[in-house]
Structure formats: structure tokens, C-alpha cells
Length: 224
Ligand SMILES: O=C(CO)[C@@H](O)[C@H](O)COP(=O)(O)O
Ligand SMILES: [Fe+2]
Image 1 (cartoon, helix red, strand yellow):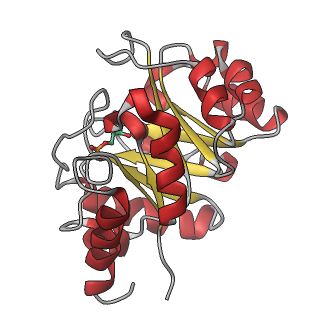
Image 2 (image 1 turned 90 degrees about the vertical axis):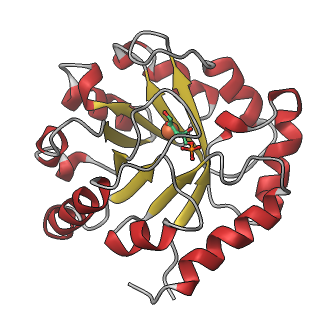
């Protein structure tokens, strides 16, 4: 059976033991590592920059999926590429130069993604689908881990999955925010190829146990 890729977001990991936590995730069988970069301008929170991405590059072979929640992302694409990102995604709302940014990421030899906030019409992204390796639909307002999934996202996923099937079937549809064992099947069946999961994986329980619960949630429902 086809399975979604699981990309743990480290936002709720224990940052004092980050290397260890990432190795634990890799051993448990996750597919990517999702790194949330926030600048205190595009979103109200601050996290980390290329130095931390580079440090993480040194502890895992998994693809690094860098989610830039920063204003003027084009200024930093090269830094994140050099730090070892495999996929670089920025927000359609963060720049008037989305097309140029995507081209630049590809020139740097990386896979290019574009994200949309819950309040942004999907049209901000759909005309660029042929250029995308990844389309990221936010299912919470970006800025913080541990928020609730916005139910209207499911319909947006279905619409985008339909469009991409015609325009660019190779493009991966990623969904980010509030994904738990209880709703993962609904999101996957709507058409998500990649599930970003933060607080439901990095919490007080062992990650391997949480991952098993998440996969159990997906398998319990019939395949898509
Ligand atoms: O980009 C973001 C938040 O802005 C996400 O990657 C979250 O960090 C996911 O965490 P959970 O919602 O799964 O706790
Ligand atoms: Fe994210």
C-alpha cells in the first residue's frame, strides 16, 4: 500500500538533545526531517537559521526539508542550500518574486517548494504548480507547534491534489500543522503525499511509539 512520507518537525523536540532526538527519529523510520525557520517578522516567533541546519546535516542522512517562514526569503536561499538543505520551501505571501525564488532554488541544485497560509487562496500557488517539486498547504497559522488542525484544510488538499494530478503529478503535496493519529488518515486520503508532524511525534512519549500510533491511524482507515 502506498504510504505518505512522514516528516517530523523538530519544533517541539528537546533542543538541548537535538542530535540525539534526530537520530532517534531516523532509527524509528521517519522519511524526512522538517526544519521550521522563523524570523520574527513573517511570523511572530523566532527559531534558528542555517547554522543549525548545517549542524543537523552532520547527524543524519535523511532529506532535510527546510520550511522558511521568513520575509524576503530570496536573500537566504543560498545560505540554506550551502547548509545542506535538500528541499527549500518559502511562502507565497513572503515575496513578490516567488517564480524567481523557485528558479534560484533549482539553480542551487535543490528541490523547490512553495507554501500557502490557511487564509491565502490556493490560486497564489496553483499557477506555479508546473515549477514546483513540493506544494505546502499550511493547516495551522504558521509560527508555533502544537496548534489545532483547521478543518477547512481537508477540502483545500482535495482541490490541490486534483489540480496537481493534471498539471504536475510529480509535485509532492505536503500538509503541515496539527496532524495527529486521529486525523492523519483523513489528510492522507484527501491527497497529501507528505505529512509534517511535530508535537504528535516529539513529546513525552518515545518517538518510536508515537510514530507507530500515527501509522496505525493511517492504516486503520482504508487506503486511498
Ligand atoms: O511550520 C510549522 C508551524 O509554523 C509546523 O511545522 C509545526 O511545527 C508542526 O507542529 P505540530 O502542529 O505538528 O505540532
Ligand atoms: Fe513547518
